[in-house]
Image (cartoon, rainbow, N blue to C red; front, side, top):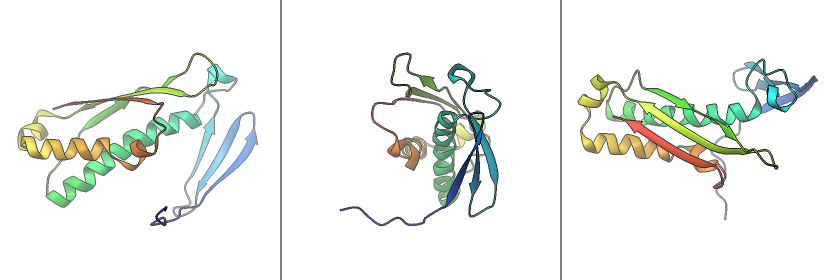
Amino acid sequence: MYRLEAAVVEIKVRYEGGLRCEVHHGPSGTRHATDAPVDNQGKGETFSPTDLVATALGTCMLTTMGILAKRKGWNIDGIDLTVHKHMTTQPPRRIARLPVRMVVPGTISSALDASARAELEAAARTCPVALSLHPDIALDIEIGW
């Protein structure tokens, strides 16, 4: 049995032509565009839909860690994260790999004991986006403490 969603967020998408979409985030009113990448007939002038998946993973990992850190009274401001999106080379076109490299500044790392680091790593690895990705997408998460 499925659990009911805690919150429903409306996101509207309009196809503008030229392989570009305009998106509208209902709760905030924020607007954004997506574009097909150059290697798939687009202009590559902004995030592609699959770029947003990689972006969602990275931001979700850090946000989830931030929620835990806030609750525990830890300062994790300044952690940097890079995601490299790798697409398949053979059809069907899809995301194949999302390697993630997180760099924790020494001032943060030295302020956290092994238990705190383990909690933060678990939060990152089990963020909602990571848990929502298809298991065929290879996640390689490296956290440099």
